[in-house]
Image 1 (cartoon, rainbow, N blue to C red):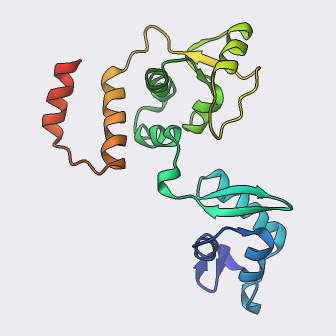
Image 2: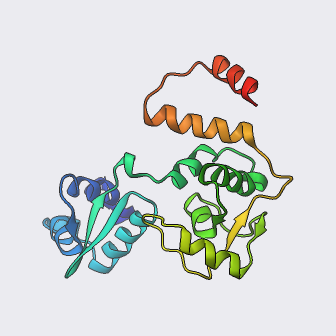
Length: 198
């Protein structure tokens, strides 16, 4: 299989094409891809590729005994964390972590877990006030997050007092809402209104 292509079609595109409609198991995807002699791919390579596509939020995995099914991830299934990560992608990398921490803290009105920051694309050292173990344990009991597994030893953070980005938070959340609901915005008018609010 040269350069990850199947008869001129990228493997990713072939998988997306196969998964239009209902979800399928690895065996079903494997059979469809390998129907033609020229397009053989090893099952383990396919499994790794499906995992990677799930990690990059192209596919969604669902366990239906006895197998795992893969579905295309629809755009409206993108999490708020991923949307905030996309909206801040062009921000300076040295401040992006604390900016996303501030935006999530403002939106959620609570400390932000490390796993939430990771879903927004932030890894490594977090510039924020880390909650102690007792505070984190108490917070885990109060927070119910769909699709996120948070253990009692998971780190949680508050923004530093010096890290305040209200204008960026309004811009990012405004962009997400306008894209989600297809609201047409006039840049200068919206900015003028935001400046008056802040």
